[in-house]
Each structure stands twice: as C-alpha cells, then as structure tokens.
Length: 211
Image: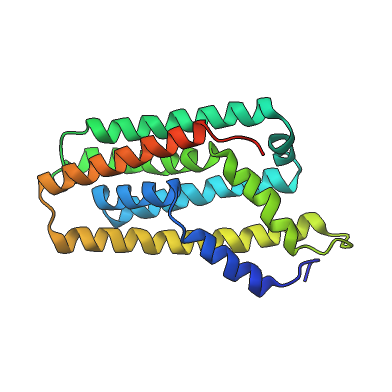
C-alpha cells in the first residue's frame, strides 16, 4: 500500500518504541500529575505536533541535514538540551506540590502553555529527527515511485499510535494522582524527581554525538 511493506511489524515496533520512557513520556507524566488529565492531553497533543514537524522534515529530506551536518545537529542539540534543563530547573525550584489549589484563571493560562512546552520538548530533540530518518525508510519499498507518500503514511500511523499511548499515560497519571490524593509534600518530591530527570536528560542530550 503506497509503497510500504510489513506495516504490521512497523506498528508493533513503533508501539514498543513509544512505550519506552523518554523526555516526552516524562513531560506528559509530570503535566498530568500536576494539572490533571486535560493538561496531560494538551501535552500529548503538543508532542504529537512536534512529531509531525519531524515527519514532514524527514519526508522532505531536511532531516538528512541533521544526519550529515555536525553544525546543524549541534545547534538543535544544544537548543534542546538547554530547554530540557530549563524545564528541569523550573520543576526543582517549584516549592508547591501538585496544582490542586490553583485558581481557575491560572490553571487555564498554564494549560495553554503546556501544548507548546510539549511541542518544543519534541521538536528540539534531534534524536527524534534521526529516528524518523533511520527507522521509517526500512518499511518503504526501495523501488516505489511514491516514497514520500509512503513515508507520510507510516509517519501518520506512528504518530497516531504514539499520541494514543501518550493520552493513556496522561489518563493513568492523573487517575493515580487523584487516587493517592497527593499531599503537597508528595507533590514536591515528584516535582524534584521529574526535575532531576529532565536535567539529566538535557545533560545527556548535550553530550550526545552525531554517529
């Protein structure tokens, strides 16, 4: 179909990759725990929008620039690392726990930002671009005359499955938070743990190399 092959295997492999914890997973987990299911869904949609950017870039060949240019890879890498560290430090400095006592106006304003935070968390990770460039073409027929259409089709399938998983993560995290009826002290330690993990991910990304 549209020059693809082994689509079932692609879906299975994509789901396994989606459930592997990473920066996107941690961001959605943290936003869902702090702001509830709505915030988690916005975070998941932001991450999905970021994947669309990577998908289009890879389909048009722009991601090949990251794979071949150390300067381009380094620029995106350092921007992404800085943003992850920024998010981590913000969580570490946050003195309160989960946002259960926010005013309604502040909560609405905060959730509007969550989408764009999720978007930037994904877009500024060059490893995602290289993933699309390396993984998706393995399921496209080399002799196909519709390679771009095939790439976009597989990218859409991957993104839909990934977004569905992320929405499930958001629901699970928000439901668990309600069940625990988390105190401010518990929320504070969750923020610290997530903040530390974001800083660690940012540092890891900063020292990653273009192989």
